[in-house]
Image 1: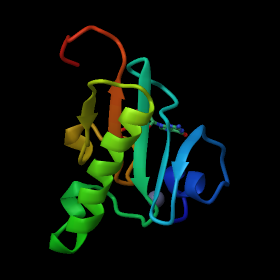
Image 2: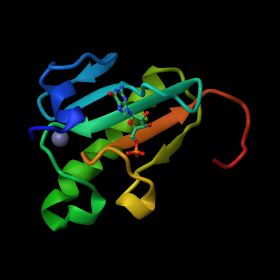
Image 3: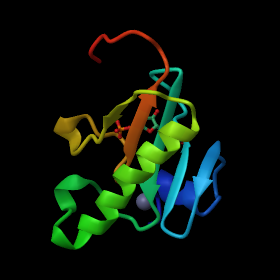
Length: 111
Ligand code: 5GP
Ligand code: ZN
């Protein structure tokens, strides 16, 4: 989608530190990490957020969660946090659905 920063990353119109890519998903490092490791996983189709999802997105969402687990393992995380912010009131800043996976520090403070 035009004017979507994550679509621009998918299309390689703007750079990102990409750690994984397949036909359906892209994963890259968050530009402003909140932990030692902080990646974002996005589907290549433009969907705003979880609020816009329905039953037709079940497979896409499930695969995204499992990809997060796989990549966390690949990045050496024995445990990690996950987050999907949805809507302005949910703290969402980029309106292309994305799955945060982060960890690596020992602190267990809630963010
Ligand atoms: P949200 O608050 O929407 O869940 O999170 C958006 C995330 O995207 C933030 O953690 C922010 O640091 C990250 N982000 C925003 N713009 C860019 C960008 O251009 N490149 C990368 N790699 N991350 C971005
Ligand atoms: Zn997009």
